[in-house]
Length: 131
Ligand code: HEC
Image (cartoon, rainbow, N blue to C red; front, top):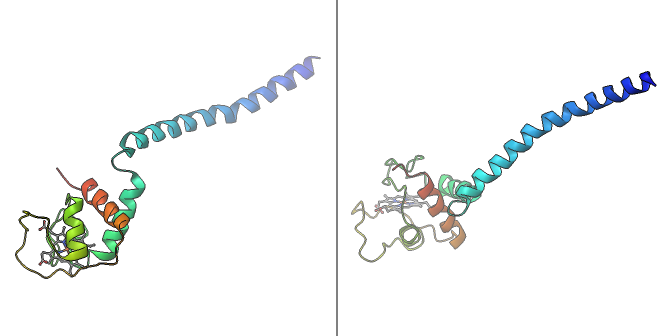
């Protein structure tokens, strides 16, 4: 009887170990979920990442890999609003009344980008803007 009890206690101790390890991990997961949910409404992390990939693929030939800085040809464009990005990238135009940073016409249009990619670019360029 005493032996059986000892075994039962041992089993409990063994069982408890992983449980106590799982709990902090679960807490971290919940905290992370809450943190992501907090910034998720206006800037979903996946949209930022998708936008970064579009930027790296299509823009850094001329713009700086850090959009807060001027690039080899293009100016700093961090924080550019979606309308400006769409007009420039798709039509080489500017929104009505917008005063361009440069008077040059050296940018090339990339008309193949989809509206969703323009959305993601805008989310990315807003997210990386240094205030
Ligand atoms: C071939 C080089 C080149 C590429 C590629 C390029 N740009 Fe540009 N971009 C420029 C230059 C140069 C200007 C300045 C105006 C001009 O000379 O056309 C500019 C201006 C801009 C502006 C206007 C800045 C302002 O506020 O006046 C935006 C926004 C912009 N680019 C976004 C982009 C995005 C987003 C991409 C990628 C999808 C991109 N550009 C790809 C060269 C480029």
